[in-house]
Image 1 (cartoon, rainbow, N blue to C red):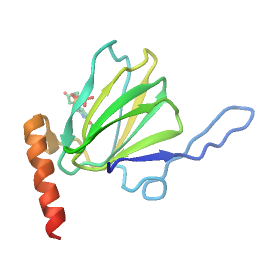
Image 2 (cartoon, rainbow, N blue to C red):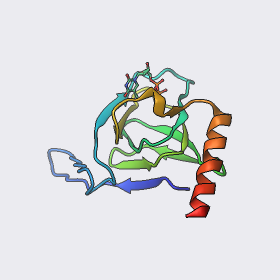
Image 3 (spheres, rainbow, N blue to C red):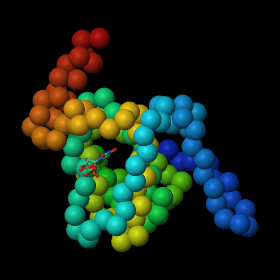
Image 4 (cartoon, rainbow, N blue to C red):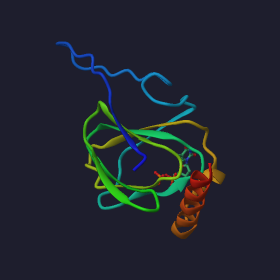
Length: 140
Ligand code: TYD
């Protein structure tokens, strides 16, 4: 699938750890927005949508959570449990975040400002979008 795991360099010494992420150097887009999710309720999922153009990088900077990723043709589950590991999601990936540990903090770097029009929240509409994208890929 089109997602990519990034293992960021850690700068550790006897004071602790530090991770730096630079746009276009460590991740493939310019960062226009940052948001984070915490205090997640046990047993609940978040996300449950795809994006038409948005690229994102997800890092569980504390605790852990799982991602269910789906490109319309295959599904994969990814565990995020290391503060120096990120998952890059290009456009067109359906995602669900779940199994948050009580202390989980999920940091998201995004390539665009918030735009509700970029969301695909209906799964059937997502499958149609994925099919359309694949048709275009094949015709280039
Ligand atoms: P929502 O898309 O439901 O979050 P998730 O993908 O984690 O399930 O967003 C929750 C609320 O926050 C919703 O009212 C929209 C708002 N929001 C913003 O205002 N800006 C943002 O960057 C994001 C991601 C959400």
